[in-house]
Amino acid sequence: MDFIFIGNNLAADFVNTEVITPQGRTDLLSSAELLSTWFERAGCARGVKCTELDLEVAKELRAAVRRAFDRMAETKPLQATDVELLNKRSNELTRVLSGTNNSYKFTYRLETTADVLALIAQTCCELLASPRIDSLRKCASEKCILYFVDTSKNQHRQWCSMEICGNREKVRKHYDKNKVH
Image 1 (cartoon, one colour):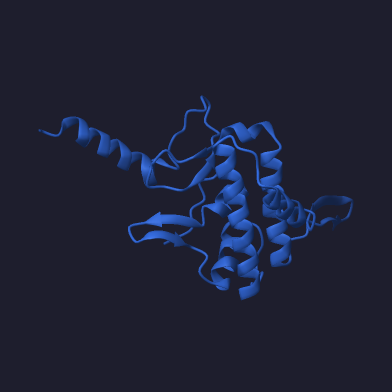
Image 2 (cartoon, rainbow, N blue to C red):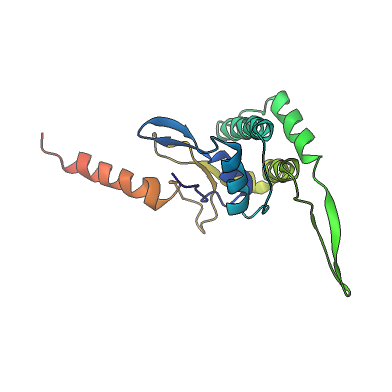
């Protein structure tokens, strides 16, 4: 299975590395190499080589972000331990000034796994603390655990994507409505 980038937010896309398949809950980050690949495909960093320890730390962060999103979706307060972890990781983010010939930019240093995980934590914290948190949605399909930030004009998006769950749910509803008893 390939990675899914439908979250409209780096932290949501990171949480979405855990999916439901016909075999059940599936972790798309089953190796350190896949974590490195995800960093690259997410546009975070190229050439960052992750270790098994990095993978454990990443999964711990992903679990905290998922719990935070779940609690926000249920309008419950965040767990203190998750807030602590998000703060700790996001505080590890380093900004650097780079450039030449009077053309400079202030960006994040993204050279290590810790740097990228810090960016994901920072993105999560920014979302949790912003009005955009009201646009955080969990897919309406009972068989899906994906999250997204609804950027639609009318803010009525229900499905992680039409291709993944939307069409399937519409077909199911049509079948249920038209089935002969």
